[in-house]
Length: 215
Image 1 (cartoon, one colour):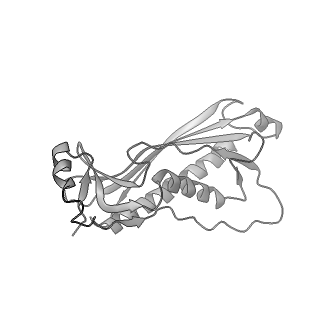
Image 2: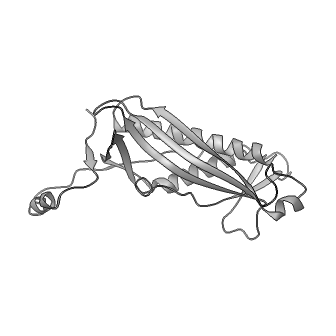
Image 3: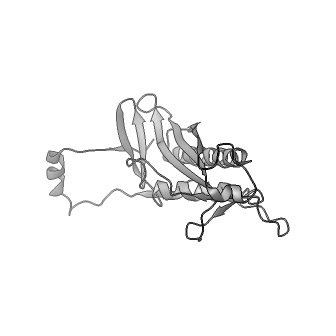
C-alpha cells in the first residue's frame, strides 16, 4: 500500500485536539531518501586544461519544494508524501547532481569553485520552477515533473580568452528544460527513483546545452 500523504495545512482545532495526546503517542517513523547521486567523472587526459570554464550560481528552487519534503500534486490539491523526507534539502541535492553532470564532462568544461577568485568567462544560473510528483487521480501512479530554466551569460573575460559565445559579450542565452518521468508504482521508493532519474536527465541536458552554447 502506498504511504499516506500529509496535507500542507491543518486546522488549528485539529492541532489543539492532538496536542493533548503528544506525550502518549510516538511520531510516525520517517524514512530519508536522496536523488541525483554523483556520477563518476572520467579520468583526465594528460594535463590539457578544459577549453571552457563556467561558474554555476546557487540553484534557485520553489519555496514549497526546496527543503526536505516531497511534494505531491493532484489537480489543484497539494500535499507532502507522508513518512518520507530527502536526506538534505532538495535544492542542495539538485545542486550536487548538476555539478556531477559537469564533472562527467571535465575534458570539455571546468566548473569554477564558488570560492575561487576571479571572474569566470561563463556564468550559469539554473532556476528550478517545478519539482513534484503529479497524480492524474487520487491513488494513481504519479509522474515526476522537473522543470528548470537555465541562463548562460558571458563576461568580458570570455573574449580575452580567444573564444566566443553565441550571444554577444555581456549578453545571455537561456532555455527551459522539462523532464516528465513516470514512477513505476505509487510507492515512495518508486517515486524517489523517478525523481532520481528525472534529475539526472535534466542536469545532463543542461550540461550538454551549456557546452554547445559556448562553442
